[in-house]
Image 1: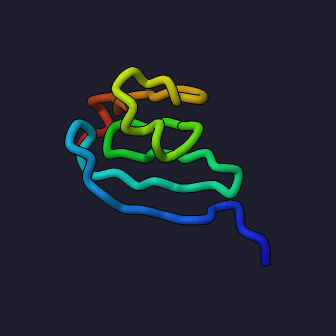
Image 2 (image 1 turned 30 degrees about the vertical axis):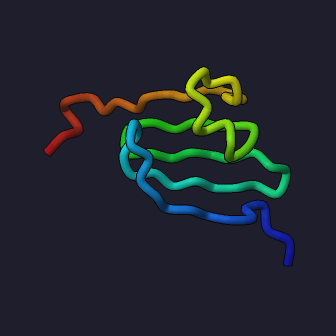
Image 3 (image 1 turned 90 degrees about the vertical axis):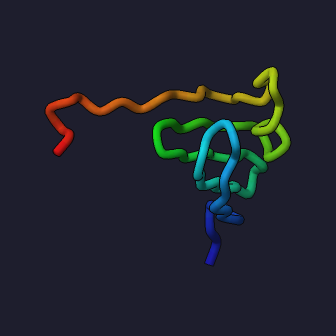
Amino acid sequence: MDTIIDLQENLSLPPRGNVTLLHFHQGMVLLVGEDAVGLYRDRVAIDDPLANGVTVSYTHLTLPTSDLV
């Protein structure tokens, strides 16, 4: 069976907290954090302080206050 995701990592990145990294066979990495998501060209680009590797975007997620319990 062919899979799209090659590897999944669950780790803590100091500036972002706990994150999940989904590594795709094509080399791109999707970062899913507690409050943001980002798509990067490769794993090395995630640690790039200039964000040269951001392929699509890094977006903070916000919930409307009415959704909080």
